[in-house]
Image (cartoon, rainbow, N blue to C red; front, side, top):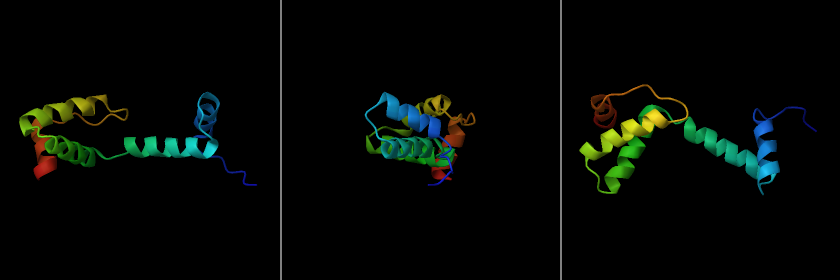
Length: 91
């Protein structure tokens, strides 16, 4: 049996105690959440812009929303101006 510990073993144990998740499922949830929050800022901006554009929002609606979302990210992104957001999307 391996003596290597998962870096988030305590969190996985907590999830298995407080939810119906088994250890494998809890580990996958932790991995998914970490992956979600490790998305680089420029990829996040492009992804969210595309999602909102697909819903029919205009850039004047999108960029302030994305700027507000970035301020609320768990892993704080740098403060970006609306111009900087546009440059990430359009180059």
